[in-house]
Length: 407
Image (cartoon, rainbow, N blue to C red; front, side):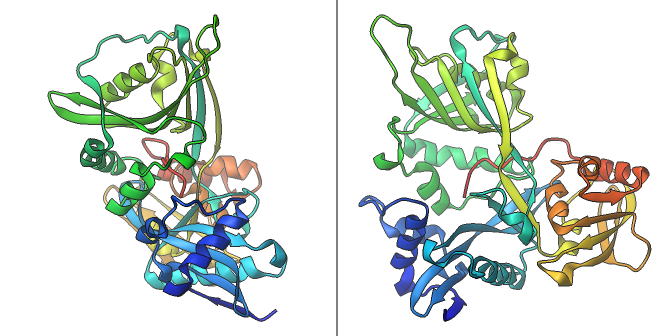
């Protein structure tokens, strides 16, 4: 095997797209114009494997800002990772990931993030399971909300109008919740509002609703419908929620009242709600909502100093971390983190460590969605009870992290 790792050329974009789709079991559809993918993906941010002239592995990065506790940081979004089935178990994935993380480090991105197609793969490259999402199913036929007041109004709008309004609402909440990603105009156009029929899986086109108070937009929802109707039976049709973004509690309540009260569509599903979503506390019978949590965003710390100094902390303190990073050995070492009410400082040190952990565990803990004591109980973090308790207080945040979309 004559292996070369490099970005694709512009002339190789179509073959990149074709090889990528094939590994995931699909085919290029006639509606899938390559200009859509090209508008959100820079070929210079691809890291691909070639066996001679044959493209046998793909990997790429989207350019994001990620909301972290109290701030935002640049993040490379690891995506489109494939190895052709003819070339498995030859070290191709490892070689691509080494080049991929180096590319991010060279760009000055302190973080990498991904949604894992298989959850067993990326821990060995230093990505930690940092964010969960809740899949919820609601039988809304007898759903009763405990609060029946509503200040504003919910209205259906067309995609063109939604495109003018939704980004500002999204940007408002993006500043407040760790795990949420920036969206460029091209991202909104291609990933949110573009809606080819072959991607609908038998469901309707996307519907768009807006919540306003005193003419001010404060929330929105995107959803699909799917009819399931048999004569002389109760309706069983579904609402499939794509996204709910609410800037206020009133907006959240009004939007969910609307989604769960659409005639003939009593079954409601949302594949990725925040794990701390208050919906179940707004109804009289929480068993009407079935929930299970699953991993969503995985975080890889590339620059430990920049990452730890780039977020805020919920309490002041001083801890020394002994971090082991097998995939990026230059990161391994002891780091002293000191926090106060206004800033954090992180620097290498030779003093005795309070807490020992891997880069993978640090990624899992970084956004505040997991606890040091939990990972210590699982044998993944070592430290005294006092140090672990302090770390839990420092890294905790006011809301759970949430990543609204797969990339």
